[in-house]
Image (cartoon, rainbow, N blue to C red; front, side, top):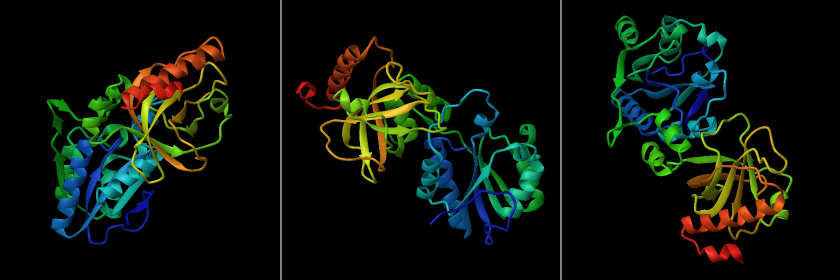
Length: 317
């Protein structure tokens, strides 16, 4: 089982030494997966612990004055680290104290004292420490002094496209779910616990399971054809989803994910649900009353059924 720690200070987490991956790891795309696989293999060869150092909130979100979309929740990221074979995650709190720490102090206190680094792996453009003062050259210089090897992971490309979180976010925002899936190595999914809503969808003939995104900013908004996984099950149940602020009725301050599962009967409240986005149908829009909204929901349902390989006539039954 993977262990999780949050603090810079504390006892050594890897007494036998460690091979470390360092990065933000938003989305755990194919480039991240290649880096973690390399760390796991090197740790096995050296007989020490594979460890990942990451940050929450994401550094770019900490410095940005505007909300920053992210590809994975903290829960999803940690589960990905465990699946990749990491024995320990040091998920550092990215705050003013950490941003004030010099790159040299980060190497000494985190990589050496906290993790007993034997190898440190980063992406080629990785920067760290106060005012981004640390880079690969500094890691190599300090590694030679302190007894670890600094290693840079080559850029991962897929069909001449650089695999990066920014590219995945751009594809998702444009509705390019197939392209994003190829870079991620899996479909794009948002997970969460089904919570109570105002049950307006039920009165309109389209009961929905609602997931509040809390502080997570989604890279997508609109109306989508989706497949849903319940509990630990795979995403196989077809549906249609809205992700937005509901401008026609009961507008909300933070985006809400509302999912209507086709031909489903049962109580989902309190269950965890995974929503896989298959195709974007349209942008969210404000309608002049409930009747135009209901008419559009019927069209959305029909189109989603068609895209998901279902009989669209069932939407009219």
